[in-house]
Length: 236
Ligand code: ZN
Image 1 (tube, rainbow, N blue to C red):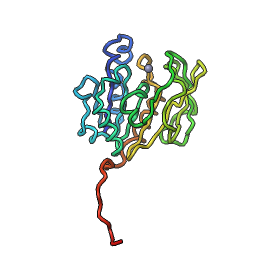
Image 2: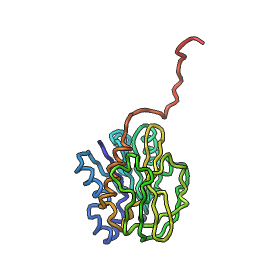
Image 3: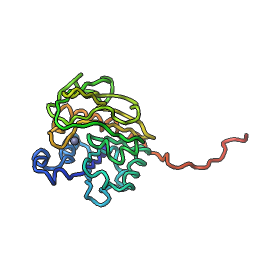
Image 4: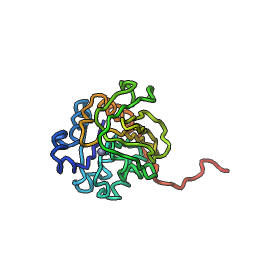
Protein backbone atom coordinates (compact mmCIF):
# COMPACT_ATOMS: atom_id res chain seq x y z
CA UNK A 1 0.00 0.00 0.00
CA UNK A 2 1.16 3.57 -0.67
CA UNK A 3 0.83 5.57 2.53
CA UNK A 4 1.19 9.37 2.61
CA UNK A 5 1.80 10.96 6.01
CA UNK A 6 1.30 14.68 6.56
CA UNK A 7 2.63 16.18 9.77
CA UNK A 8 2.60 19.85 10.71
CA UNK A 9 6.04 19.28 12.34
CA UNK A 10 6.16 22.45 14.45
CA UNK A 11 5.93 21.20 18.05
CA UNK A 12 8.89 18.84 17.51
CA UNK A 13 11.01 21.72 16.18
CA UNK A 14 9.97 24.21 18.86
CA UNK A 15 9.66 22.14 22.04
CA UNK A 16 12.45 20.02 23.50
CA UNK A 17 9.97 17.88 25.47
CA UNK A 18 8.12 16.88 22.29
CA UNK A 19 11.36 16.32 20.38
CA UNK A 20 12.47 13.92 23.11
CA UNK A 21 9.37 11.78 22.58
CA UNK A 22 9.43 12.00 18.77
CA UNK A 23 13.05 12.66 17.72
CA UNK A 24 12.16 12.02 14.06
CA UNK A 25 8.83 13.82 14.28
CA UNK A 26 5.38 12.42 14.90
CA UNK A 27 5.37 11.49 11.21
CA UNK A 28 8.63 9.57 11.67
CA UNK A 29 7.14 7.30 14.33
CA UNK A 30 4.25 6.34 12.05
CA UNK A 31 6.45 6.02 8.98
CA UNK A 32 8.65 3.51 10.85
CA UNK A 33 5.59 1.48 11.80
CA UNK A 34 4.19 1.28 8.27
CA UNK A 35 7.59 0.68 6.62
CA UNK A 36 8.18 -2.24 9.00
CA UNK A 37 4.92 -3.70 7.67
CA UNK A 38 6.24 -3.46 4.09
CA UNK A 39 4.23 -0.44 2.94
CA UNK A 40 5.70 2.31 0.77
CA UNK A 41 5.61 5.50 2.83
CA UNK A 42 6.09 9.14 1.90
CA UNK A 43 6.13 11.86 4.57
CA UNK A 44 5.39 15.53 3.93
CA UNK A 45 5.25 18.51 6.29
CA UNK A 46 3.75 21.98 6.51
CA UNK A 47 7.04 23.67 5.67
CA UNK A 48 7.39 21.77 2.39
CA UNK A 49 6.27 23.75 -0.64
CA UNK A 50 2.46 23.54 -0.74
CA UNK A 51 2.73 21.11 2.20
CA UNK A 52 4.41 18.66 -0.19
CA UNK A 53 0.96 17.88 -1.57
CA UNK A 54 -0.06 17.99 -5.21
CA UNK A 55 -2.34 16.02 -7.52
CA UNK A 56 0.37 13.50 -8.39
CA UNK A 57 1.16 12.48 -4.81
CA UNK A 58 -2.54 12.23 -3.97
CA UNK A 59 -3.03 10.07 -7.04
CA UNK A 60 -0.16 7.87 -5.82
CA UNK A 61 -1.47 7.60 -2.25
CA UNK A 62 -3.91 4.91 -1.18
CA UNK A 63 -4.41 6.59 2.17
CA UNK A 64 -3.36 9.91 3.72
CA UNK A 65 -2.72 10.25 7.48
CA UNK A 66 -3.03 13.85 8.74
CA UNK A 67 -1.68 15.33 11.99
CA UNK A 68 -1.73 19.09 12.55
CA UNK A 69 -2.38 21.34 15.53
CA UNK A 70 -1.11 24.90 15.92
CA UNK A 71 -0.88 25.94 12.28
CA UNK A 72 -3.99 24.64 10.53
CA UNK A 73 -4.49 28.09 9.01
CA UNK A 74 -1.14 27.92 7.21
CA UNK A 75 -2.33 25.00 5.10
CA UNK A 76 -3.36 26.62 1.80
CA UNK A 77 -7.07 26.33 1.00
CA UNK A 78 -6.10 24.89 -2.40
CA UNK A 79 -4.21 22.02 -0.74
CA UNK A 80 -7.17 21.23 1.50
CA UNK A 81 -9.47 21.21 -1.54
CA UNK A 82 -7.11 18.88 -3.42
CA UNK A 83 -7.20 16.46 -0.47
CA UNK A 84 -10.99 16.58 -0.31
CA UNK A 85 -11.25 15.92 -4.05
CA UNK A 86 -8.79 13.03 -3.80
CA UNK A 87 -10.96 11.44 -1.09
CA UNK A 88 -14.10 11.90 -3.19
CA UNK A 89 -12.24 10.07 -5.97
CA UNK A 90 -11.24 7.13 -3.77
CA UNK A 91 -8.25 7.97 -1.54
CA UNK A 92 -8.56 7.13 2.17
CA UNK A 93 -8.14 9.83 4.85
CA UNK A 94 -7.23 9.24 8.48
CA UNK A 95 -7.38 12.32 10.71
CA UNK A 96 -5.48 11.98 13.98
CA UNK A 97 -6.08 13.87 17.23
CA UNK A 98 -6.00 17.66 16.63
CA UNK A 99 -6.63 17.04 12.93
CA UNK A 100 -10.28 17.41 13.99
CA UNK A 101 -9.72 21.11 13.32
CA UNK A 102 -7.71 20.71 10.10
CA UNK A 103 -8.92 22.24 6.88
CA UNK A 104 -9.22 18.96 4.93
CA UNK A 105 -11.17 17.22 7.71
CA UNK A 106 -13.54 20.15 8.13
CA UNK A 107 -14.08 20.28 4.38
CA UNK A 108 -14.89 16.57 4.35
CA UNK A 109 -17.28 16.90 7.30
CA UNK A 110 -18.96 20.20 6.44
CA UNK A 111 -19.36 21.07 10.12
CA UNK A 112 -17.31 23.06 12.66
CA UNK A 113 -15.69 19.91 14.15
CA UNK A 114 -15.30 21.78 17.45
CA UNK A 115 -15.00 20.03 20.83
CA UNK A 116 -14.05 20.62 24.47
CA UNK A 117 -10.50 19.95 25.64
CA UNK A 118 -8.23 19.93 28.66
CA UNK A 119 -4.69 18.66 28.88
CA UNK A 120 -3.55 15.58 30.75
CA UNK A 121 -6.18 13.09 31.69
CA UNK A 122 -6.28 9.33 31.90
CA UNK A 123 -8.31 7.91 29.04
CA UNK A 124 -10.09 4.58 28.86
CA UNK A 125 -11.07 3.66 25.33
CA UNK A 126 -13.96 1.28 24.73
CA UNK A 127 -14.36 -0.74 21.56
CA UNK A 128 -18.03 -0.31 20.77
CA UNK A 129 -18.02 -1.96 17.32
CA UNK A 130 -15.97 -5.12 17.95
CA UNK A 131 -16.83 -6.51 14.51
CA UNK A 132 -15.43 -3.51 12.65
CA UNK A 133 -12.21 -4.09 10.65
CA UNK A 134 -10.48 -1.23 12.51
CA UNK A 135 -11.22 -2.94 15.85
CA UNK A 136 -9.63 -6.30 15.02
CA UNK A 137 -7.02 -7.27 17.63
CA UNK A 138 -8.11 -4.39 19.86
CA UNK A 139 -9.30 -5.31 23.39
CA UNK A 140 -12.79 -4.49 24.62
CA UNK A 141 -11.24 -1.61 26.56
CA UNK A 142 -7.75 -0.27 27.17
CA UNK A 143 -6.16 2.61 29.05
CA UNK A 144 -3.88 5.45 27.99
CA UNK A 145 -2.40 6.77 31.25
CA UNK A 146 -1.87 10.22 29.73
CA UNK A 147 -3.86 11.80 26.94
CA UNK A 148 -5.40 15.14 26.23
CA UNK A 149 -9.09 15.17 27.15
CA UNK A 150 -11.35 15.72 24.18
CA UNK A 151 -14.98 15.93 25.21
CA UNK A 152 -18.46 16.16 23.74
CA UNK A 153 -20.11 17.91 22.18
CA UNK A 154 -17.97 17.00 19.17
CA UNK A 155 -19.56 18.91 16.30
CA UNK A 156 -19.29 16.28 13.56
CA UNK A 157 -21.99 14.84 11.31
CA UNK A 158 -23.54 11.65 12.69
CA UNK A 159 -20.86 9.04 11.94
CA UNK A 160 -21.52 6.12 9.63
CA UNK A 161 -19.95 3.94 12.30
CA UNK A 162 -18.83 4.60 15.87
CA UNK A 163 -15.91 2.25 16.52
CA UNK A 164 -14.33 3.61 19.73
CA UNK A 165 -15.71 5.58 22.65
CA UNK A 166 -13.34 7.41 24.98
CA UNK A 167 -13.91 8.02 28.70
CA UNK A 168 -11.70 10.45 30.60
CA UNK A 169 -10.83 10.59 34.29
CA UNK A 170 -12.47 14.02 34.52
CA UNK A 171 -15.79 12.37 33.69
CA UNK A 172 -16.13 13.30 30.02
CA UNK A 173 -16.87 10.96 27.13
CA UNK A 174 -15.95 11.38 23.47
CA UNK A 175 -16.62 9.68 20.16
CA UNK A 176 -12.95 8.73 19.78
CA UNK A 177 -13.08 6.62 16.63
CA UNK A 178 -15.59 7.39 13.88
CA UNK A 179 -15.90 6.48 10.21
CA UNK A 180 -17.46 8.10 7.17
CA UNK A 181 -17.74 7.47 3.46
CA UNK A 182 -17.28 10.51 1.27
CA UNK A 183 -17.70 9.93 -2.46
CA UNK A 184 -15.61 6.87 -3.35
CA UNK A 185 -13.29 7.32 -0.35
CA UNK A 186 -13.32 6.40 3.31
CA UNK A 187 -12.55 8.62 6.29
CA UNK A 188 -11.53 7.59 9.82
CA UNK A 189 -11.04 10.08 12.65
CA UNK A 190 -9.19 8.88 15.75
CA UNK A 191 -8.82 11.07 18.83
CA UNK A 192 -5.64 9.91 20.70
CA UNK A 193 -2.25 11.31 19.71
CA UNK A 194 -1.38 14.45 21.70
CA UNK A 195 2.18 15.56 20.92
CA UNK A 196 3.27 15.63 24.57
CA UNK A 197 2.65 11.92 25.20
CA UNK A 198 4.13 8.78 23.62
CA UNK A 199 0.71 7.64 22.37
CA UNK A 200 1.89 6.57 18.92
CA UNK A 201 4.28 4.00 20.46
CA UNK A 202 1.44 2.25 22.31
CA UNK A 203 1.02 -1.24 20.80
CA UNK A 204 -2.79 -1.07 20.83
CA UNK A 205 -2.74 2.35 19.16
CA UNK A 206 -0.36 0.93 16.56
CA UNK A 207 -2.77 -1.93 15.88
CA UNK A 208 -5.54 0.61 15.32
CA UNK A 209 -3.34 2.67 12.95
CA UNK A 210 -2.50 -0.46 10.93
CA UNK A 211 -6.15 -1.46 10.78
CA UNK A 212 -7.14 2.08 9.82
CA UNK A 213 -4.71 2.06 6.88
CA UNK A 214 -6.05 -1.27 5.68
CA UNK A 215 -9.70 -0.24 6.07
CA UNK A 216 -9.46 3.27 4.64
CA UNK A 217 -7.03 2.36 1.85
CA UNK A 218 -8.21 3.02 -1.66
CA UNK A 219 -10.36 0.29 -3.20
CA UNK A 220 -11.01 2.10 -6.48
CA UNK A 221 -10.02 5.05 -8.60
CA UNK A 222 -12.66 7.22 -10.17
CA UNK A 223 -13.72 10.72 -11.03
CA UNK A 224 -16.92 11.79 -9.34
CA UNK A 225 -16.16 15.48 -9.75
CA UNK A 226 -17.37 15.92 -13.32
CA UNK A 227 -21.00 16.07 -14.40
CA UNK A 228 -20.75 14.81 -17.99
CA UNK A 229 -23.56 15.35 -20.47
CA UNK A 230 -24.58 11.94 -21.78
CA UNK A 231 -26.45 10.64 -24.80
CA UNK A 232 -29.47 8.38 -24.31
CA UNK A 233 -28.71 4.67 -24.60
CA UNK A 234 -31.94 4.04 -26.47
CA UNK A 235 -34.70 5.99 -28.18
CA UNK A 236 -37.40 7.21 -25.80
ZN1 ZN B 1 -3.26 17.74 21.60
